[in-house]
Image 1: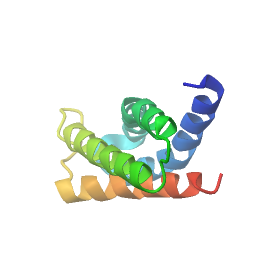
Image 2 (image 1 turned 60 degrees about the horizontal axis):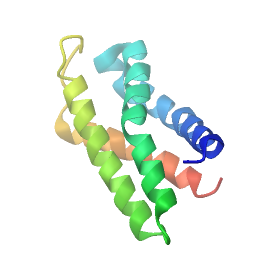
Image 3 (image 1 turned 90 degrees about the vertical axis):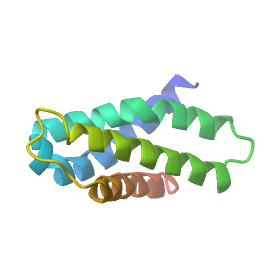
Image 4 (image 1 turned 90 degrees about the horizontal axis):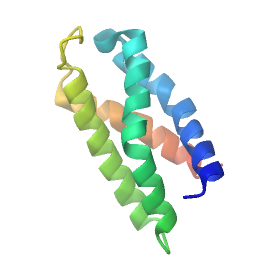
Length: 115
């Protein structure tokens, strides 16, 4: 893993996805909880996703789309768990959790193709 490139890509992902997660999750988790969730979700998924995409000989479009789909599913599952925790104000439906993860990741993945 090239640390400088990974750091830039990770910070880019946080800058792009955190506002999406903060807006979408603030009612259920509170603003601070939503920001913390964004950080936790990306810490959990970004390193492996970055490594798999960078290690592939020809990552586009197959590997890239497959990795993004896996990240969306993993982050949606983690959002489901977070919105069912004791500190959550209320549970979000599974479909809404999936839609939030899709929105955040589609936005950052799409922008990343242009950077």
